[in-house]
Image 1 (cartoon, rainbow, N blue to C red):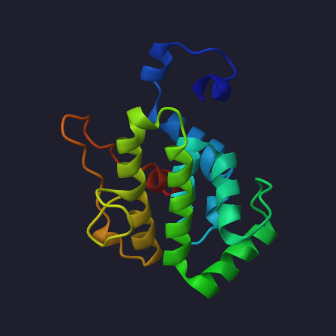
Image 2 (image 1 turned 90 degrees about the vertical axis):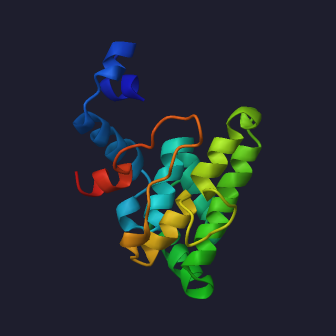
Image 3 (image 1 turned 120 degrees about the vertical axis):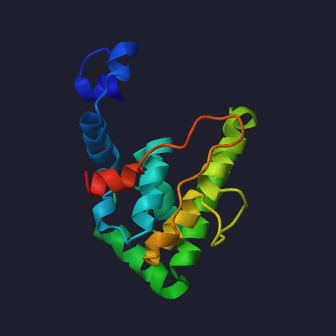
Length: 178
């Protein structure tokens, strides 16, 4: 990602010295803007951005389009935005977030590296428990709380025992308000 961004080969030292400003510019240009997160409803913007960062914008967009019954062309245009609005009006935001996260979960379960990374992916997508719970902190749980503007209930994920500390401010927050 950094090599493509800079248009030249980068070293491990270049990656270590990446500034927050440059990282945010990459996140915004290559993920947030690509999935048109600023046009998506609150909560869905976060879940789509998170999916894009971890599995690529094209997959995130196409799976969102499949979830809402739009043509999976990989471009979020007016037709997709209308399908999203229609889906939410008919089924609710909670349903959309759960079915979208389920599509993402099904994708990662099919990866050859699932046996190695699956537990971490489960925690990232669903949190400590599968599904959506008020007390959990998976991406789907945080997305639903965002959609309800329940900001004070959103907690940062805690590391699994023996793992690294949780990341600092969430990338979506930094992209929206650097």
